[in-house]
Image (tube, rainbow, N blue to C red; front, side, top):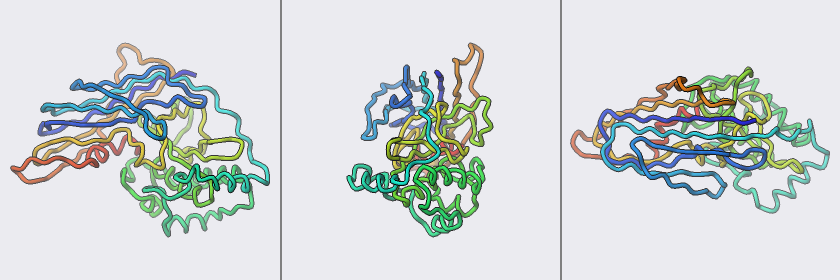
Length: 327
């Protein structure tokens, strides 16, 4: 199956900023059963876009916009070919836990076995684990399948119920969250069980499916490493295994490693910024007259000295674009 993806991010500032420097992780990966056939990233105002791969093999585009500007638009277009995901059995053999222990002993997947910024142990997480009763009387795959379903049943999907920098305790307290929260909670529990687990950012093709996650946004899920099977994707937001319609963009320890956009800008005092995002995933290119619907995800004010110019921190653009992953 071939999919087209258009992902447009638009920043607007009440007071023009003098410079922006941004990196973007929007290009789908080419690995496994997925291949990115075409990709382009353009900016307005125009800029020279450079690209490199990070240590996880994610494609990172970066650019700078010099000169005063009150708007910045980043447009990513991709054509992706995705093959059918390999069949995953219902369970593995009795020796699977021992095989996992031997794999972990090599240290190769250390970073996906230990806590990270957003996927770490807390008393509320421990309470959830006890409530679910996740023990190892079943093999790792059956254990993961059950956990995927338990999180789907026990957590309510609610857009904008948390922030990009919300710790998992916020979602655990209210039992409400978005795909980012579902994924972080699952990753933390899976790592505690001794199964390497990582965060995946990407897109989900929704047509004809009763998914809980929103269609006009990016998506997130988890991948666990299993003996003989390799990395297997689990989507606790929708209670499914990752399949052909899950389009992978970037992998990391958690969301902090793979935000769609991150950067800094130089601006004067009291800069007010707004973010609008449009995402479309489909089996064919949009028609000539078809326009993407922009959603005003966030408005943010930076109240500084009334006369002194200020340079925002690196977190600023990441906080602005938070709702891209929060749907």
